[in-house]
Length: 375
Image (cartoon, rainbow, N blue to C red; front, side, top):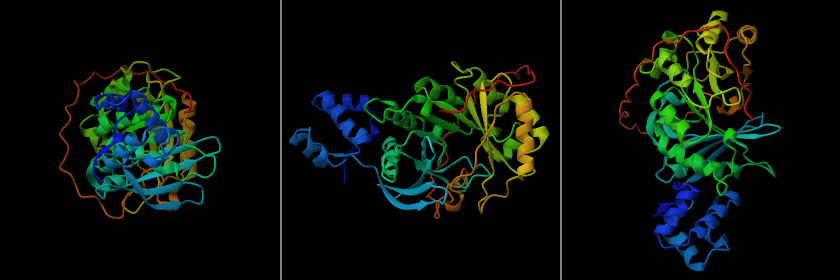
Protein backbone atom coordinates (compact mmCIF):
# COMPACT_ATOMS: atom_id res chain seq x y z
CA UNK A 1 0.00 0.00 0.00
CA UNK A 2 1.32 3.42 -0.89
CA UNK A 3 0.53 6.69 0.82
CA UNK A 4 1.46 8.72 3.84
CA UNK A 5 1.81 7.09 7.25
CA UNK A 6 -0.52 9.07 9.50
CA UNK A 7 1.28 7.83 12.63
CA UNK A 8 4.33 9.77 11.48
CA UNK A 9 2.42 12.80 12.75
CA UNK A 10 1.65 13.58 16.38
CA UNK A 11 -1.98 14.57 17.04
CA UNK A 12 -1.09 18.27 16.81
CA UNK A 13 0.86 17.73 13.58
CA UNK A 14 -2.06 15.69 12.26
CA UNK A 15 -4.39 18.65 12.85
CA UNK A 16 -2.02 20.90 10.90
CA UNK A 17 -1.84 18.36 8.07
CA UNK A 18 -5.61 18.08 7.85
CA UNK A 19 -5.94 21.87 7.76
CA UNK A 20 -3.41 22.02 4.91
CA UNK A 21 -5.48 19.40 3.08
CA UNK A 22 -8.59 21.56 3.46
CA UNK A 23 -10.12 19.27 6.09
CA UNK A 24 -11.58 20.36 9.45
CA UNK A 25 -9.01 20.04 12.22
CA UNK A 26 -11.53 18.33 14.48
CA UNK A 27 -11.61 15.42 12.05
CA UNK A 28 -7.94 14.87 12.87
CA UNK A 29 -8.89 14.74 16.55
CA UNK A 30 -11.51 12.11 15.79
CA UNK A 31 -9.04 10.09 13.75
CA UNK A 32 -6.41 10.24 16.51
CA UNK A 33 -8.99 9.03 19.04
CA UNK A 34 -9.78 6.03 16.85
CA UNK A 35 -6.12 5.17 16.28
CA UNK A 36 -4.78 5.56 19.81
CA UNK A 37 -7.56 5.56 22.41
CA UNK A 38 -9.76 2.97 20.70
CA UNK A 39 -7.19 1.02 18.68
CA UNK A 40 -9.28 1.06 15.50
CA UNK A 41 -7.21 1.30 12.32
CA UNK A 42 -9.66 0.19 9.62
CA UNK A 43 -11.44 3.16 8.05
CA UNK A 44 -14.71 1.24 7.94
CA UNK A 45 -14.78 1.15 11.75
CA UNK A 46 -14.38 4.91 12.20
CA UNK A 47 -18.11 5.51 12.20
CA UNK A 48 -18.15 9.23 13.04
CA UNK A 49 -15.99 10.12 10.02
CA UNK A 50 -17.76 11.00 6.75
CA UNK A 51 -17.67 8.42 3.98
CA UNK A 52 -15.47 10.62 1.79
CA UNK A 53 -12.81 10.85 4.49
CA UNK A 54 -12.97 7.13 5.17
CA UNK A 55 -12.44 6.53 1.47
CA UNK A 56 -9.36 8.77 1.50
CA UNK A 57 -8.02 6.87 4.50
CA UNK A 58 -8.23 3.67 2.50
CA UNK A 59 -6.88 5.10 -0.76
CA UNK A 60 -4.32 7.75 0.17
CA UNK A 61 -3.12 7.23 3.75
CA UNK A 62 -1.81 4.41 5.86
CA UNK A 63 -2.74 3.75 9.47
CA UNK A 64 -0.42 0.77 10.19
CA UNK A 65 3.36 0.75 9.95
CA UNK A 66 4.15 -2.70 11.39
CA UNK A 67 2.87 -6.24 11.31
CA UNK A 68 3.40 -8.83 14.05
CA UNK A 69 5.77 -11.55 12.91
CA UNK A 70 6.49 -13.87 15.85
CA UNK A 71 5.52 -13.79 19.54
CA UNK A 72 7.34 -15.53 22.41
CA UNK A 73 5.97 -15.89 25.95
CA UNK A 74 8.28 -16.23 28.95
CA UNK A 75 7.49 -18.29 32.02
CA UNK A 76 7.55 -15.05 34.05
CA UNK A 77 4.90 -13.39 31.87
CA UNK A 78 7.25 -11.33 29.69
CA UNK A 79 6.24 -11.19 26.02
CA UNK A 80 8.67 -10.53 23.16
CA UNK A 81 7.49 -9.90 19.62
CA UNK A 82 9.35 -9.52 16.37
CA UNK A 83 7.65 -6.87 14.27
CA UNK A 84 8.06 -6.38 10.53
CA UNK A 85 8.16 -3.04 8.75
CA UNK A 86 6.74 -2.28 5.34
CA UNK A 87 10.16 -2.68 3.69
CA UNK A 88 10.78 -6.03 5.37
CA UNK A 89 13.02 -4.93 8.24
CA UNK A 90 12.48 -6.73 11.54
CA UNK A 91 12.68 -5.27 15.05
CA UNK A 92 11.85 -6.50 18.55
CA UNK A 93 9.69 -5.09 21.33
CA UNK A 94 9.09 -6.48 24.83
CA UNK A 95 6.14 -6.31 27.23
CA UNK A 96 6.98 -6.65 30.93
CA UNK A 97 3.83 -7.14 33.05
CA UNK A 98 4.00 -6.51 36.78
CA UNK A 99 1.35 -6.39 39.49
CA UNK A 100 0.70 -2.65 39.29
CA UNK A 101 1.92 -1.76 35.81
CA UNK A 102 2.86 -3.06 32.37
CA UNK A 103 6.02 -1.70 30.79
CA UNK A 104 6.70 -1.74 27.06
CA UNK A 105 10.31 -1.62 25.87
CA UNK A 106 10.45 -0.18 22.34
CA UNK A 107 13.15 -0.06 19.68
CA UNK A 108 14.27 3.04 17.78
CA UNK A 109 16.62 1.61 15.16
CA UNK A 110 17.03 -1.57 13.14
CA UNK A 111 20.17 -2.81 14.88
CA UNK A 112 22.50 -0.33 16.58
CA UNK A 113 25.76 1.40 15.57
CA UNK A 114 27.29 1.79 19.04
CA UNK A 115 28.74 -1.73 19.45
CA UNK A 116 28.53 -1.92 23.25
CA UNK A 117 30.50 -5.05 24.05
CA UNK A 118 27.95 -6.62 26.42
CA UNK A 119 24.86 -5.99 24.25
CA UNK A 120 23.58 -8.44 21.64
CA UNK A 121 22.00 -5.70 19.52
CA UNK A 122 25.41 -4.03 19.20
CA UNK A 123 26.72 -7.03 17.25
CA UNK A 124 24.25 -6.34 14.43
CA UNK A 125 25.47 -2.93 13.30
CA UNK A 126 22.97 -0.34 12.10
CA UNK A 127 20.32 -1.16 9.51
CA UNK A 128 18.46 2.15 9.59
CA UNK A 129 16.54 4.51 11.83
CA UNK A 130 12.91 3.69 12.51
CA UNK A 131 10.31 6.21 11.41
CA UNK A 132 8.01 7.91 13.91
CA UNK A 133 5.16 5.67 12.73
CA UNK A 134 7.24 2.54 13.27
CA UNK A 135 8.04 3.62 16.84
CA UNK A 136 4.43 4.55 17.65
CA UNK A 137 3.07 1.41 16.05
CA UNK A 138 5.06 -0.76 18.45
CA UNK A 139 2.68 0.47 21.15
CA UNK A 140 -0.34 -0.35 18.98
CA UNK A 141 0.86 -3.82 18.01
CA UNK A 142 2.05 -4.81 21.45
CA UNK A 143 -1.12 -3.77 23.28
CA UNK A 144 -2.97 -6.23 21.04
CA UNK A 145 -1.03 -8.97 22.85
CA UNK A 146 -2.21 -7.94 26.32
CA UNK A 147 -4.85 -10.10 27.99
CA UNK A 148 -8.17 -8.82 29.27
CA UNK A 149 -8.21 -5.35 30.79
CA UNK A 150 -4.44 -4.95 31.04
CA UNK A 151 -3.01 -1.83 29.43
CA UNK A 152 0.44 -0.42 28.79
CA UNK A 153 1.25 1.98 31.63
CA UNK A 154 4.94 2.72 30.99
CA UNK A 155 7.08 2.99 27.87
CA UNK A 156 10.88 2.75 27.98
CA UNK A 157 13.08 3.51 24.98
CA UNK A 158 15.57 0.79 25.85
CA UNK A 159 15.11 -1.67 22.99
CA UNK A 160 17.17 -2.00 19.82
CA UNK A 161 19.12 1.12 18.84
CA UNK A 162 20.34 4.39 20.37
CA UNK A 163 17.33 6.72 20.72
CA UNK A 164 19.32 9.97 20.58
CA UNK A 165 20.75 9.02 17.17
CA UNK A 166 17.15 9.09 15.92
CA UNK A 167 16.09 12.07 18.01
CA UNK A 168 13.60 13.76 15.67
CA UNK A 169 11.48 10.64 15.20
CA UNK A 170 11.77 9.69 18.88
CA UNK A 171 10.56 13.13 20.00
CA UNK A 172 7.60 13.10 17.61
CA UNK A 173 6.66 9.60 18.81
CA UNK A 174 6.83 10.76 22.43
CA UNK A 175 4.49 13.65 21.60
CA UNK A 176 1.94 11.06 20.53
CA UNK A 177 2.52 9.05 23.72
CA UNK A 178 1.91 12.11 25.90
CA UNK A 179 -0.86 13.85 23.96
CA UNK A 180 -4.39 13.71 25.44
CA UNK A 181 -5.66 12.53 22.04
CA UNK A 182 -2.76 10.14 21.68
CA UNK A 183 -1.99 7.57 24.37
CA UNK A 184 -2.41 10.19 27.14
CA UNK A 185 0.55 8.92 29.16
CA UNK A 186 2.02 10.94 32.02
CA UNK A 187 5.57 12.17 31.30
CA UNK A 188 6.91 10.28 34.34
CA UNK A 189 5.73 7.07 32.67
CA UNK A 190 8.05 7.52 29.67
CA UNK A 191 11.82 6.97 29.90
CA UNK A 192 14.44 7.50 27.18
CA UNK A 193 17.78 5.76 27.60
CA UNK A 194 21.07 6.82 26.01
CA UNK A 195 24.54 5.33 26.03
CA UNK A 196 25.89 8.87 26.16
CA UNK A 197 25.23 10.82 22.95
CA UNK A 198 26.08 13.97 24.86
CA UNK A 199 25.25 16.74 22.33
CA UNK A 200 21.66 15.55 22.03
CA UNK A 201 20.84 15.10 25.72
CA UNK A 202 19.91 18.79 26.27
CA UNK A 203 17.86 18.71 23.05
CA UNK A 204 15.81 15.77 24.30
CA UNK A 205 15.15 17.38 27.67
CA UNK A 206 14.16 20.70 26.09
CA UNK A 207 11.74 19.03 23.66
CA UNK A 208 9.82 16.55 25.84
CA UNK A 209 9.42 16.30 29.65
CA UNK A 210 10.36 12.63 30.05
CA UNK A 211 12.67 10.63 32.31
CA UNK A 212 16.30 10.40 31.20
CA UNK A 213 18.23 7.17 31.70
CA UNK A 214 21.94 6.79 31.02
CA UNK A 215 23.52 3.41 30.29
CA UNK A 216 26.60 3.95 32.45
CA UNK A 217 27.94 0.49 33.40
CA UNK A 218 31.21 1.86 34.77
CA UNK A 219 32.44 5.03 36.45
CA UNK A 220 35.99 4.45 35.14
CA UNK A 221 36.84 5.74 31.66
CA UNK A 222 39.25 2.89 30.92
CA UNK A 223 36.52 0.32 31.59
CA UNK A 224 33.68 2.24 29.98
CA UNK A 225 35.77 2.75 26.82
CA UNK A 226 35.52 -1.02 26.31
CA UNK A 227 31.94 -1.58 27.47
CA UNK A 228 30.44 1.52 25.82
CA UNK A 229 32.82 2.66 23.05
CA UNK A 230 31.06 6.02 22.55
CA UNK A 231 32.76 6.93 25.84
CA UNK A 232 35.97 7.50 23.82
CA UNK A 233 34.23 10.44 22.11
CA UNK A 234 32.31 11.68 25.15
CA UNK A 235 34.21 10.58 28.27
CA UNK A 236 32.76 10.66 31.74
CA UNK A 237 33.84 14.21 32.62
CA UNK A 238 31.99 15.46 29.53
CA UNK A 239 28.92 13.24 30.03
CA UNK A 240 28.53 13.87 33.75
CA UNK A 241 29.36 17.56 33.37
CA UNK A 242 26.51 17.90 30.86
CA UNK A 243 24.11 16.12 33.22
CA UNK A 244 25.05 18.45 36.09
CA UNK A 245 24.03 21.43 33.97
CA UNK A 246 20.60 20.10 32.95
CA UNK A 247 17.72 22.24 34.27
CA UNK A 248 14.93 20.92 36.48
CA UNK A 249 16.86 17.97 37.93
CA UNK A 250 16.03 17.31 41.58
CA UNK A 251 15.13 14.45 43.90
CA UNK A 252 11.72 14.16 42.21
CA UNK A 253 13.22 14.29 38.72
CA UNK A 254 16.54 12.41 38.86
CA UNK A 255 18.70 10.92 36.13
CA UNK A 256 18.36 7.13 36.09
CA UNK A 257 21.71 5.38 35.69
CA UNK A 258 21.63 1.84 34.33
CA UNK A 259 24.56 -0.21 35.66
CA UNK A 260 24.98 -3.76 34.38
CA UNK A 261 27.09 -5.79 36.80
CA UNK A 262 29.67 -8.04 35.11
CA UNK A 263 31.81 -10.49 37.03
CA UNK A 264 35.35 -9.24 37.53
CA UNK A 265 34.79 -6.19 35.31
CA UNK A 266 32.85 -3.53 37.25
CA UNK A 267 31.47 -5.26 40.34
CA UNK A 268 34.03 -4.62 43.11
CA UNK A 269 33.47 -2.57 46.25
CA UNK A 270 36.02 -0.10 44.91
CA UNK A 271 33.97 0.20 41.67
CA UNK A 272 30.97 1.07 43.85
CA UNK A 273 32.97 3.74 45.71
CA UNK A 274 34.16 5.29 42.44
CA UNK A 275 30.57 5.30 41.19
CA UNK A 276 29.40 7.19 44.28
CA UNK A 277 32.20 9.73 43.87
CA UNK A 278 31.58 10.34 40.16
CA UNK A 279 27.82 10.82 40.56
CA UNK A 280 28.18 13.35 43.38
CA UNK A 281 26.07 16.43 42.73
CA UNK A 282 23.74 14.75 40.20
CA UNK A 283 20.23 13.95 41.48
CA UNK A 284 20.25 10.30 40.53
CA UNK A 285 18.85 6.82 40.92
CA UNK A 286 21.04 3.80 40.13
CA UNK A 287 19.42 0.68 38.69
CA UNK A 288 21.66 -2.37 39.09
CA UNK A 289 21.23 -5.13 36.52
CA UNK A 290 23.18 -8.40 36.81
CA UNK A 291 24.51 -9.27 33.36
CA UNK A 292 22.12 -11.26 31.18
CA UNK A 293 24.41 -13.69 29.32
CA UNK A 294 24.13 -14.25 25.58
CA UNK A 295 26.25 -16.13 23.07
CA UNK A 296 28.12 -13.07 21.76
CA UNK A 297 29.12 -11.60 25.14
CA UNK A 298 32.40 -12.47 26.93
CA UNK A 299 30.89 -11.42 30.27
CA UNK A 300 28.95 -13.25 32.96
CA UNK A 301 26.90 -12.09 35.97
CA UNK A 302 28.55 -11.89 39.38
CA UNK A 303 27.42 -14.13 42.22
CA UNK A 304 24.64 -12.99 44.57
CA UNK A 305 27.11 -12.21 47.36
CA UNK A 306 29.09 -9.89 45.06
CA UNK A 307 25.90 -8.11 44.01
CA UNK A 308 24.93 -7.71 47.68
CA UNK A 309 28.33 -6.21 48.58
CA UNK A 310 28.17 -3.75 45.66
CA UNK A 311 24.64 -2.68 46.51
CA UNK A 312 25.45 -2.44 50.20
CA UNK A 313 28.33 -0.05 49.51
CA UNK A 314 26.01 2.24 47.53
CA UNK A 315 23.46 2.22 50.34
CA UNK A 316 26.10 3.01 52.97
CA UNK A 317 27.13 6.01 50.88
CA UNK A 318 23.63 7.45 50.87
CA UNK A 319 22.27 6.16 47.56
CA UNK A 320 19.01 4.31 47.13
CA UNK A 321 19.82 1.82 44.36
CA UNK A 322 17.38 -0.70 42.98
CA UNK A 323 18.20 -4.22 41.84
CA UNK A 324 16.39 -5.06 38.64
CA UNK A 325 15.61 -8.74 38.44
CA UNK A 326 16.03 -10.35 35.05
CA UNK A 327 12.82 -10.76 33.07
CA UNK A 328 12.29 -12.83 29.94
CA UNK A 329 15.77 -14.34 29.78
CA UNK A 330 14.32 -17.71 28.66
CA UNK A 331 13.07 -16.03 25.45
CA UNK A 332 16.13 -13.76 24.99
CA UNK A 333 14.06 -10.73 26.01
CA UNK A 334 16.14 -9.54 28.96
CA UNK A 335 18.25 -6.37 29.01
CA UNK A 336 21.05 -6.59 26.45
CA UNK A 337 19.71 -9.71 24.76
CA UNK A 338 17.66 -8.28 21.90
CA UNK A 339 19.17 -9.43 18.61
CA UNK A 340 17.67 -10.84 15.45
CA UNK A 341 18.73 -14.21 14.12
CA UNK A 342 19.72 -12.52 10.86
CA UNK A 343 21.56 -9.18 11.13
CA UNK A 344 20.07 -6.25 9.18
CA UNK A 345 21.83 -4.89 6.11
CA UNK A 346 24.24 -2.25 7.37
CA UNK A 347 23.83 1.43 6.68
CA UNK A 348 26.90 3.63 6.24
CA UNK A 349 28.30 4.98 9.50
CA UNK A 350 26.44 7.93 10.91
CA UNK A 351 27.87 11.43 10.66
CA UNK A 352 30.31 12.15 13.45
CA UNK A 353 28.83 14.15 16.31
CA UNK A 354 30.92 17.09 17.38
CA UNK A 355 31.69 16.83 21.10
CA UNK A 356 30.74 19.86 23.17
CA UNK A 357 33.43 22.05 24.63
CA UNK A 358 35.13 20.06 27.36
CA UNK A 359 34.04 20.97 30.85
CA UNK A 360 36.59 21.12 33.67
CA UNK A 361 36.40 18.26 36.18
CA UNK A 362 33.93 18.95 38.96
CA UNK A 363 34.95 19.30 42.57
CA UNK A 364 33.82 16.07 44.16
CA UNK A 365 32.39 15.34 47.56
CA UNK A 366 31.52 12.12 49.30
CA UNK A 367 27.98 10.85 48.93
CA UNK A 368 25.49 11.42 46.16
CA UNK A 369 21.99 12.69 45.87
CA UNK A 370 19.33 10.15 45.10
CA UNK A 371 15.81 10.28 43.82
CA UNK A 372 12.66 8.23 44.13
CA UNK A 373 12.02 5.20 42.00
CA UNK A 374 9.97 5.57 38.84
CA UNK A 375 6.21 5.64 39.08
